[in-house]
Image (cartoon, rainbow, N blue to C red; front, side):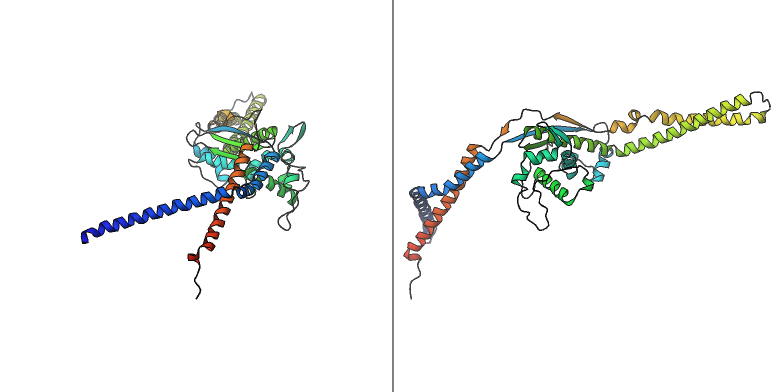
Length: 375
């Protein structure tokens, strides 16, 4: 009798599992039937989402996106020598993640700011890229016409930049610059328009940008790359240039001493060429000795004072562009298929939740077994 207990227990567990699975399937069929019965409710819930997405599809401006790829040529110099000045200036050390640091530099306020204040001509109008960005992105109508969120925050409605001397900016100008920077690199309120990424396998870096204008996208992306390249190279060679200036100043000083000594020796010979006593010839010998010494001293720096021949000149890094953005760019509208999918998806999710929860509540209220018996 005891040997049959495991079989009975196993059979009962299997029966309970079958009953539970059957109950789940039956319950699912009930909810499926309920959803089919309330298709009009689902359609009504989907309708506002479809209208919302349709409005976005009709009113969202076309976006022009492009990218720029480049790599850094540092094979001729040491990594620490090339990047020490740059990375030290921003509080970083030279490690294997140099590409990632270069991309962080591309997203920095300094590089973006220098790019925004380049003057270019777009649609026949020459102005700062910052002002082109304000007009083309319609910030005055869509972003800057809103009431400031915080007390004391200046209103940017109707603002345009009139100067590029950032150090002398007013509170209003700084607020506008920070607003543009937040739109480009991303903030709590905006998805980034500008992106930067690194391919760890190939070492190729990519900058990307999208705006509402083909010309603005190309001009601004190229300006960011140019400013990044110039700043990177200048910062990397700053110490080498200081060494070069010191060498050149010393060479110039020695050259002046040598020329002066040669002139005094020649003048002494002209004035005292008939002197025969050894003591009378002593000044001439001293001048000749000084001339030879200065010539020997000048010979070393004079060979290296020319920048192309300096050893540090071979360590200058070079940012090599690979693919530069060129027109024409294909505009990307807010797709109708995307709008339809999002509208239906959001509407169906909320509609199914609404009908399912309503059925659940009704079943609970209609089931006497779930009601508490009266005393």
